[in-house]
Length: 188
Image (tube, rainbow, N blue to C red):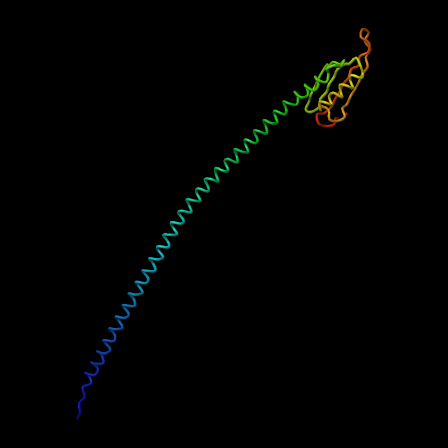
């Protein structure tokens, strides 16, 4: 009978497979190590990119803060400009309101020069002006109205009332009333 030792063959085969399994283990370990190193390297690159983005965000935030501060100053300047413009407009309006009576009185007084008329009352209410006076000559009243138009006080047709009075000492006198609106037409 022939005896064959099968156990040795299994043993050699098991050793061949054992070396093979160890190789596979080493290859797997090297592969895992490579993946770990590649993963670490990729994480480092991403970390650097993240830090750059954080720095860029910080720079942009500072720039935005400067722009907002400048915008705030600009808005403040705009408000101050509006307040100054309103104040200037109010001063201009007040000065014009004060100038109108001065111009009126100047024109009224200069129109009387050289004429035989005298004024009893000058009244200005809003923009309506009423002049009351007396004259010894009817033509002088017309000349006085022309003088007022020359001084550009009357720019439209005025309302004129003339009453005749007889006085014993001086003869005829004419009472008159002239009503007009500055820079507008007067309604009766």
